[in-house]
Structures are given as structure tokens and as C-alpha cells.
Length: 206
Length: 395
Image 1 (spheres, rainbow over the protein chains, first blue to last red):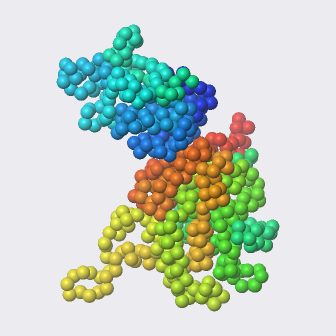
Image 2 (tube, rainbow over the protein chains, first blue to last red; image 1 turned 180 degrees about the horizontal axis):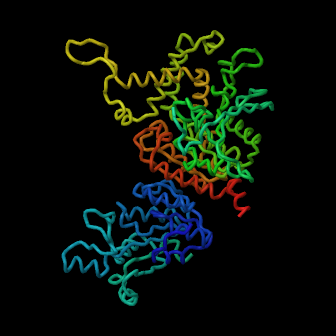
Image 3 (cartoon, rainbow over the protein chains, first blue to last red; image 1 turned 90 degrees about the vertical axis):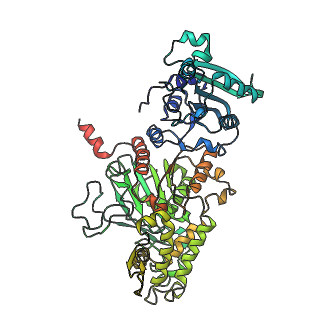
């Protein structure tokens, strides 16, 4: 069964996944990424999801999907029991993103986080010029009814990583819509989506 | 009674009986020299025998899981909502087998059967059973039917316990384990309910230490109370409130009236209890509730469920229902967590349902969707049924 086309951040993630990896995908959605990693990287593991439709889509793909609310933590997973823990476009929906990050780095040897950049010029323009919270094709929700409750910019995220002693193994910025040359010039202003490949500090340079 | 059978029914079905003459040594050490299992099948076994699904029934269930025995039947089999053409367990794709468990009272050898040593009913002398005994006897039935490996073993509640035991005892004989509203072991509260039910039976003056059949009587009132207790625990507060509220069946609270008042829920429970007591054997009830109480999946694996599940080689599908307080979602989570710890393939759906433990039997959109999709994946793995292969060969 064919999945949906992958988002750009999902396409990029695969480059950091080794063959035969054990993967935990937090907020795995319809399982497009997991299916891809299973089929192309022989990856095994689980997706966690709470949406009934998404869980059904994962079942259709024959993926291992667990109905689990990420805000309840990952206490049911052992330390370093996965090669890579992935959270694509979901950290901004968490009640305690910093704790989720800690948990991801406990459970996984490495982790990959992708999130929308709240420092993107369109978001800044909304706030600065219009004085309104940004609603755009990238962030299509009104402030009062949005799953996105903890926005950050690339710079914010990197400050958090520094404070926690997290090493950024790779960072990739992808744009679905805006031109690419601008994002290379100033990622925090022109980058739409960030992809961070992380591990705990003492495991860098393995 | 259906005037015509629904299109998605397996239709009229006839139970079959299989006699086993090879002695069966039970977990308690006793050997049954011979025993019989009554069972039903629906659908067609395919050429390479890869589409067989075993249904394990729960406490009060039996082999009649789907369809009708006659056009006069008031209700279809106990899991007709989920077994039939186009249903979750699709009989157009699967060959479904559902036996009545050993120790039951619907035709398989049990306490109401004749003890060959005495010529009298076994009664209380029927050997103690464990879940593993059921699994072993089901495996022997599979041998007879020529099924080396089940596409799936499926069960809810006590049936789910049998499914998990299957996965550990015969890892090479099932590809999928579907465990619905179940638990790796009962809680103290659960055992307490079972013991209260047993005491209700045993304190019936007609129980006669379990030898009621020899005396040509039945402990019906005790068994009815036992069933009423059980029934309450299978429903949720919400479900009972919605169905009955405080509606009166008779009498009133008007001043000046002193007709006895009866709530609808009282009448309903008594009806449920009485009809159960007419159809179920009290010794079977005691025997099966004890097997439930004794079950502990990880007991012989150092009480470590992760260690236990490392012996499994099948994929698991676990389902729970939010308002189920007899086999709560927490019990299912424990199963899932143990499977995750053992790095086994598992999918878990926590269904939001107001209908308590009974939800596993009742229609529910989300449950049906998830269950149907999971089973459809299993069907894709198994080979197409015989008739379709034949058609393709012609084309």
C-alpha cells in the first residue's frame, strides 16, 4: 500500500537513519515516514499516536502503532532502547517540550526533532506589522484553537540544547514554499522548518 | 428471530463434535482419558491452510460465536457483531474455528458430563483447569483440523488470556495474537468479585456440595445471583444509567400508595440471572472463574512479563475500552508495555467507549474500524481462499 507523499522534513530525516535501525516515531501520524524507513532502511520499531484516523492509517500499512499520549511521557520505554527517536512537527504541541526532549534522549541513542520556525519572516511580519498572531499556510490555526502551544525559533531551540548539554549532530533547514537561497543566508528569518539531529553531549564524536 | 438472515451473517450453522481418545494430562496432574470438544466453523479453509482463525471464548461464552442454529433463534452467536462476511473477522477471507472450552457446559466435556469412572456426573470432582489446559486442547483440535499455524488467535477478556498463553506455549503455531479487553492476571478486586459469585452459588441450598445433578436439582438462585454480580461488573455506571436510570417497572412513590416498587434495573438483572441459570452449569461457572483467578501469564517466567513475552514470535494487536473497569485499559497497557520491553511487534488501540467490559462484544465504530483493518492486514498475508484461486486459474 502506498503512503502519502512525504513532507520535506521527513525526506531529509532518512539521511540520518542507518540501515536496520530501531526507531521510535513520536506523533507518527499516518505512518508515512515509518513505512518509508521500514521499506527502504529495513528499520523496525514503533509509532506513537493518539489520532484514531492516523492509527487506522498505520494499521493499514502494517506498522506497529501504539495509542499513547506523549504528554504522559515515555516511562514505558527503557533507556537507550532505540537507535533513533523521531519527533516530526509535534514538539510545539507538547505541554512540556523540554521534558519530552529529555525523554527522547534517554530512550534513544540519538534523536531527530523537526518543528516549524516561529522566527520565519512571515510570522514576524504578522506580529510586527499586523499585530496579530501568525496564521498562514505554514501555521494554519487561530491562536485560540491550535494544537501548537509552544512555539520557538531555531535560535530558541539551540539555546535550550546548549543549556541541556545536547549536541547538535546536524541541522537542516527546509522550505516547502519560500526560495532556498534566502534560508541559507539567514535560516532563522527565512527557514520554514528545522530538522535537528541530536545526541547527549558526552556521546558526541563517538 | 430473523425472518430472513442478514447478508452479513454466516447464516445457519451446525456445531460439530470432536472426540479425543489420546489421554490429556492437565496442569493439575490429573489425566483425562478421553474428552470431547464441540466447535463451530465459519468460512472456508484455503489450500495452504493459512487463513484459519481461532476464537477463544470468555467466561460465559461458548462455541456458538456467529450465525444462527435455527430460524427460530432469538439472537445470533455471541460475537456475531464481529464475525461474518465483510465483518472484522471476515468469513469470506478466513476460516474461523470456535470451540467450547473444556470444562464448559455447552457440549464439551465438563463437570456436567459423565465421569467414566463412576458413571455419574463429574460435578465437583471434575479436575481443576488452567488456561493452559484450554490452549493445549485447542492445539489438539487444530491438529485434527490440519491447521499447523493459525493466521490469528483472537479473544476478549478470558479469551485474551488464552490468546497470550497460545503465544507463549505454541509460538510457531500462530502469526497474530489479538488480545481484547484482557489482562496478564486478575487484580484482587477481580478475584473478589469471582469469589462472591462462587459463594452465591455454594450457599444455594440446592448446591449440595456440587452434587446437585445426582440429586436431580439445580442451584439456580445461587447461579442467578452469581451472574447478576458478574453482569454488573461488565457494564459501566454510565451504561446502566442510560439504559435504566431510576425507571420503575412497577409500583410508584405516590403518597398513599404502598404497592411494592420495582426498578427496571432490578427486573433486568433478575431476568439476566434467571435465564443464565437455566443455561449454564454451576460447577462450570466455579471451575472457569477459578481458572481466571489462577491465570498469571508470567508466573513461570520469574514473574517478569517482559521475559515471558520474549518467547513469543507472533505480532500482537491489543485493544482496550476506556470505561472497562473489570479489565481496565491499565491492564492492557501492562500487556503492551511488556511487549514493548520484549521488543515484540505490537499495535495498541485504546477505544473510547461508555459501555464497560461488554464493549468488546458491542458495535462501536472506532473499534470496528481498527479491528477490521488489522484483520484485513492478516488476510492479505494469508493466501487467497480456494475458490478465488480457482477463478484466477480459469482466467
